[in-house]
Amino acid sequence: MTTTGGSIFDAMLQEFDGAARILNLEPGIWRILTKPKRQIIVHCPVQMDSGEIEVFTGFRVQYNIALGPAKGGIRYHPDVTLDEVTTLAAWMSWKCAVAHIPFGGGKGGIICDPTKMSRREVEALTRRYVAEIIDAIGPEKDVPAPDVNTDAQVMAWVMDTYSMHLGHTSTAVVTGKPLELGGSLGRREATGRRVMLTTREAAKHVGLDLTGARVAIQGFGNVGSVSAELLAALGAKIVAIADWKGGVYNDAGLDIAALLDHAKIHRTVAGFARADPLTNEALFGLDVHILIPAALENQITMANAGSIKATLVVEGANGPTTPEAHRHLHERGVFIVPDILANIGGVTVSYFEWVQDRHGYFWTEREVNERLEQKLCEAFHDVLQTSVKYRVDMRTAAYIVAIGRVAAVTRMRGMYA
Image (cartoon, rainbow, N blue to C red):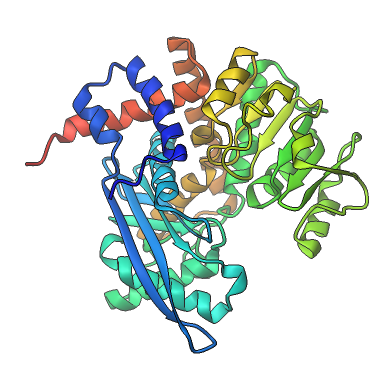
């Protein structure tokens, strides 16, 4: 089952290979770390509201579990592929290692369009999918979380299905749950908060004052909206935001609170009255200090990299910059904070939630945010010091940190025969 030759996985391998060569990684460890440990394909029959039976294809990939249980979200989308899920599981492996938390990398997905399904159909599909992969998940095996088109309610169904099979309640099998079922305070805002904190630390490094700094953000979902709100609170001027339906621009700065209200009603920033319309393409060419791609993969390419004027690019999405575009920007002196460092807030607070569930003792939101900031600062400066030591960009440095940690544990554990 080696459907890992697609372009997304190849892009990850290019990033991996550059760091592995600098580390002089031995061939055996190299081979281990570039192959997924387990790829699961399941077919889930569901009786739809019409009475017809549909069969949905689902995936769960555990890429590497040397550091601990696999960790990663479950996404529901018509374009989900095994290659995509495998790549995302690999990225999760490196994110957890960079964050210095005891998780490996996992990811799941189902090929479906939940926007065209009823709540009952989505619940039935979720429960059948969990039943199909139930032997592979658990608090000490693989801990799923929300991702594209899944949320706290879906995680509640996952937790309940797993618990019913187990015979007792097991809250630690998933993270991103409702607070009433063992969720953690601060979890929803965690990735956006991490992007804000990373942007703050990176701005200090490049000598950029955030007060009045002009910021453009692609994406206004959970990550983009929280990032915008928190950066505005630090004094940054959010001048442009674009999402799946369009974008908005205001040279004097957008009213983020009003824009959030607009987006809640219309499910897009497009049409916001206090700004000019803007296309996704035009957003990348704006005269801004900071650019935050927080939408989908492969958004910054050689087709638009030459137009980017930002001093600082902070990757809030997974894989938003192609390797060629990254090299181009780096050579131009743009400071890029890579995804495996910038957007690990969600998995960090997921780790906090897992710890709280296992101990049955829960922290205040202030404690969660303080621990998140401490973890962020440690990770950022580990990567920055590695970047300086090896004279490499931050992405390569992040991979050096991650690969070095996973490789060291792999050597210590040895080969099971």
